[in-house]
Length: 277
Image (cartoon, rainbow, N blue to C red; front, side, top):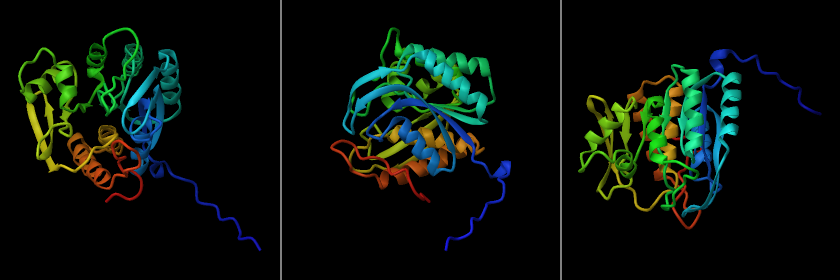
């Protein structure tokens, strides 16, 4: 005898998850890119929309091939999704080509929402292979996108690459320069630096506004930057203010890395699924 079907009561608007729009490359290993965005958002109670900007051939060690998605396809996807669902925040990862960066920039300018954008300035795979294709300067393309970013999340090497006019090791000067070019704030992550602790610093145009330190974990990871940026964007979609979103995202990322899965021959995959608190 079959059990009777029990219907759930109609969902109220306040019961629905916030919507996060993600742009990024497809990493078939599942460590970084759009897969990382989707896993992170889902773990944090957010519904992810995905606009793929590039198809790649890569594993947990490195990328070997990149093919950028045509800019017209990206524009069409952005417009279609934006018209269909109530987007609460945007996470931008790999844009892959100057044409794709321009497509995102034009969409953002046309929409002009009060919509937080977290921009992760991805230039290379974790193994070092460059991920941008097409004519034009990737650094110039990324710098042109800075006015869209409520938060920029470079590691130290990306920070240096984006500020060639600044000399020396003055991290704050570099971060403030990016704010002068339009970024609302800059979270400089320290995972790529050979220091005993991992130090992440939050800057705005006025200087450093927060610093977080955590023990450095042994081994390498594939997708740590994507995980952190997606987590910040997810908390912003939930309505957290920027500092609280950064604080919670760093906690989430620390747990994901501490319990990462060594599935391949390269960096371990952050464990973004399941309860994290």
